[in-house]
Length: 144
Image (tube, rainbow, N blue to C red):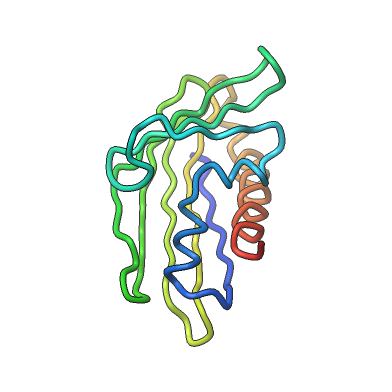
């Protein structure tokens, strides 16, 4: 298990933070060598599927994800969504949430990521590098 949690506080409202956090193609602006495409007609909510393609040219892999739980913040409240990673290379889940604070919102990214073929011994290194990468993604999505 390579589970990690990152949080970031922003002066943006919960609704604005949520909109930025769930703009899936924008995540790719902050992940090296990655493009993200929503593959369903719906761009948010349960059943939405998107694919993160990481690599250069033909060398790379797809990381398909499906939203399995969705609760938008609504009127400045708390929002949560859960994604299940359904790929051959990367599996696991992620839960993204936004909650109001006195000065804006707090966003949390919790994920359990597994890379096929890596031994269990690599779990702590996977969690550390993922925490660093997705912490950066979270900060940049909310600061842009």
